[in-house]
Amino acid sequence: MRSLYLALVLALAAVTAARGADDPVLAAATGLTGTAMFLGSGAPGLVLVVVRGDQTLVRGYGETRKGNGVAPDGTSLLRLNSVTKVLTTEVLAALAAERKLALTDPLQRFAAAAVPAFEGRPITLLDLATHSAALPREMADLPEGANPRAWPTRADRWAWLPGTALPWAPGTIASYSNVGFDLLSDAIEAAGGRPYPDLLRSHVTGPLGMTDTGVAPTPEQCARLMVGSGLGGAATCVDTRATEGSGGLYSTGNDMALWLRHVVADPTGVAGVSQAVYRLRQAMPAAIGFDEAGPMAGLGLGWVMVAPRGIEPALLAKSGGGAGFMSYVAVAPGRGAGVFVAVNRVDLAMFAALTETANTLIANLVTR
Image (spheres, rainbow, N blue to C red):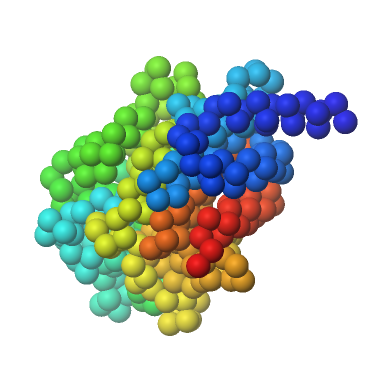
């Protein structure tokens, strides 16, 4: 009973860490819901970002590390994990708009080694961005002692790729692939003629003022990193350029608020290109690894489309997990609402309830 009381105190105290809570609708919608999300997560801490039109709210709950008594806020550094992928595809869409690449380009055009094909069908950038390149989820098991966000390196994956046999034709079956997104960021780098982090900064994070989002945190930023927990344990705060396209990004609630406002405000611009549906589930013989936040109906560039259900509108969503964190982002296309949530605990069973509550929160803000 005492532990529940302390958790309630911590959760309610965190409301004072709200940023941009001028919109009374956002404040009302997130008050009890945010506390319930935190208590249900079992995580030491939780950061919640909600956007409605031009209004934004950022709240922190619990502690940045179990037992330290420090509540997270909009400046607390966290791991995006696979939410990284939808920023990668925004850079991809921006370079496509500049005609530096086309989604239909074969990966071989930008490759550092021979790229396998299936009976003459090559892997395209679109295949990589929609998890339909016939590549495995990972190259192999994580080597003992390796940081999960600093392996495999670029050299590792390009040494591995030429000897990989594709089990089916690219573009036919969707099967979740992290290594595919790291190969995609390598192709983006080759097409853009600059290191990928520079392209991310020039096309997405820089214009939006996302100063804490990147793959090479400074000592000052590392000091603000929430400490992960749960399955697999926490990972050290290191340069994560090796997985810059798939899951390596660090960010903060404040930065994700800037990005979410941009995403919901620009449904027909570059962000909208990545949100279009390119692979319909019903058109594929199989779709593997996409249903953790609701049944996947289609795939955008990195985004997972969830069809409307009951009171919930159609959503574009992306989840991520590992290195001591789980994260989730969802937007209601064309409805001006979105949610981002991150917890410093890895627990797959907990995460299903967390995403369901986040989706319901959007439904509370989008009623028609």
